[in-house]
Image (cartoon, rainbow, N blue to C red; front, side):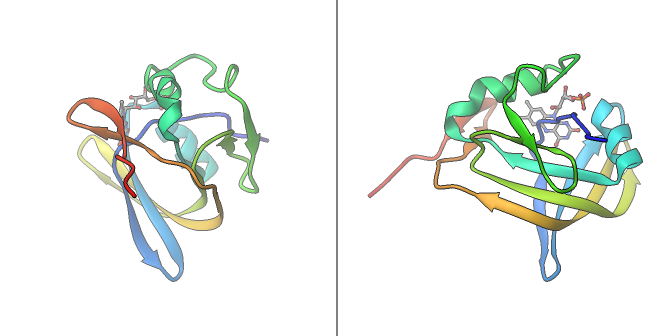
Length: 133
Ligand SMILES: Cc1cc2nc3c(=O)[nH]c(=O)nc-3n(C[C@H](O)[C@H](O)[C@H](O)COP(=O)(O)O)c2cc1C
């Protein structure tokens, strides 16, 4: 079974290089929360600077998030978005609730990257890194 859900997140943090681990913080009201909890897996897709419209699409909570989005599936059966700058496939190693949100600590089981500029969100707007040199 594949897990075709998505969530635009702002907070993610590299926890440990060995074993490679990353955490995400998810609102318990979001659909993704129950899906991550049930499946025990998630993938972090880092969108590229040209994918701002995709970020807005996923943040709007569409009924079928991936119906119109080109993607493949990773080894953890979560979507990898075509054109993202990098992705981290995770298996949930620990979860803790705090207030309205849950922290999911994921062990990275696979990853990939390509040479592109990531999409950033700062001061209420999507932005891209200024390129120098
Ligand atoms: C820039 C940005 C950052 C966001 N960061 C988070 C986040 O860290 N955690 C979270 O739960 N929602 C975050 N959201 C909100 C979710 O993307 C939004 O609630 C989404 O509709 C949830 O989809 P779902 O219900 O299908 O999971 C963010 C939205 C934006 C635009």
